[in-house]
Length: 106
Image (cartoon, rainbow, N blue to C red; front, side, top):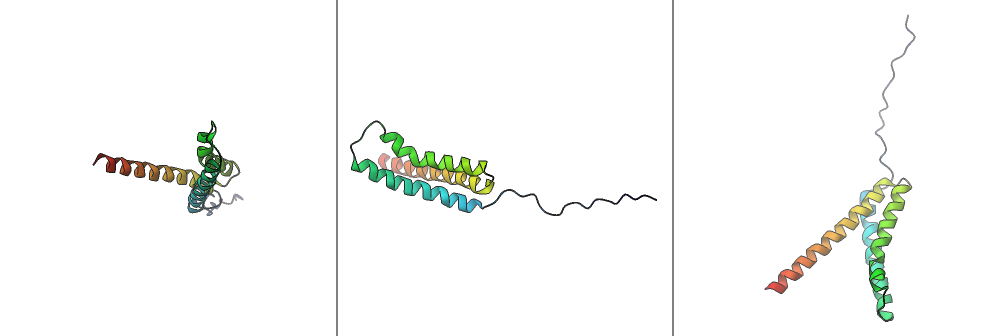
């Protein structure tokens, strides 16, 4: 009598993008560590000037730009991993600063 067939739900989970969070975290650490090594060499090879602060922050700027580009192109998990890696770098820096100031107070 009825020619209506019940629809079968899709069993595939929704895609959250390509890549992995660990790859994004590793990419963030690689960008920041290699970037600071190169900017340190550049700063030591020339006299300090107005652009020194911007030069020292350029690896973090590149890291944020890389994460933004990855998110915009659809690599959601790697992009989120880059921002998570940048947050972990900031946490490590804060912990090291707190430890140094703790040693100075003694």
